[in-house]
Structure formats: structure tokens, C-alpha cells
Length: 121
Image (cartoon, rainbow, N blue to C red):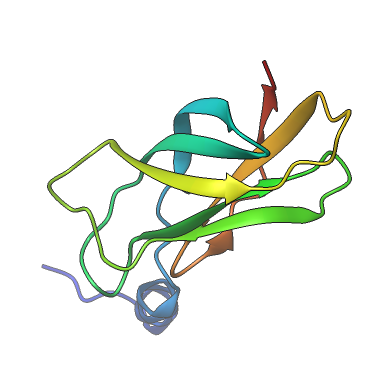
């Protein structure tokens, strides 16, 4: 077997040092329900959690201008529970708001650029 040239070895070393990017957390479903003066959100996420070093660690409700209305922190990985649903109650939505966005976050890669727009019933 012929040895690899130095440049090929250097390229392999460089590629091995790059961070591995996983799929961002995906919002599979959102259920929003008025609860008196506030709202409850049930959000189902999927993400290829690998353990404590890489997992979907939160989601938030935003108005259409990007202002945060509510934040749900996920305190542990869900390696063997995919997809999974978590809830957030007590979210104050300004009167007259007809839609909001939900955005998911990963411990390693931060907030997913994509959001899911939800029409409020």
C-alpha cells in the first residue's frame, strides 16, 4: 500500500478537527390554548440528542417581531425519547395578537434560525 502524501494527511487532520454539526432541533407540533388571561403551549420537538454534551435544551415563544414572550428550558437530554413534548403555561400574549412563532434551541448550536408560525385560536 502506498503512503498518503503529506497534503492528504494534513487535510484529514483538518477535517477531523472541525466540529460535527448535527441536525438542528425540529418543531414537530405546537398546540396553543388560552388559559384565562394567559396561554399554555405544548411543543413537540425532535433532535438527535447524544447525551449531556449535545441535546435540545429549550424552546421559546416569540411575537412576530421576534420579542420573547415565553421560554421553556429543557434541563436534560432526551436520547431515548424522540420526539418529545414539553409544556409552558402562563405565557402572556398581547391582546389582538393572532399569531406567534416558536423557536427551538440546541445546547451546541444555539437557536435554530427556522421558526414555526402558529395561528392563535
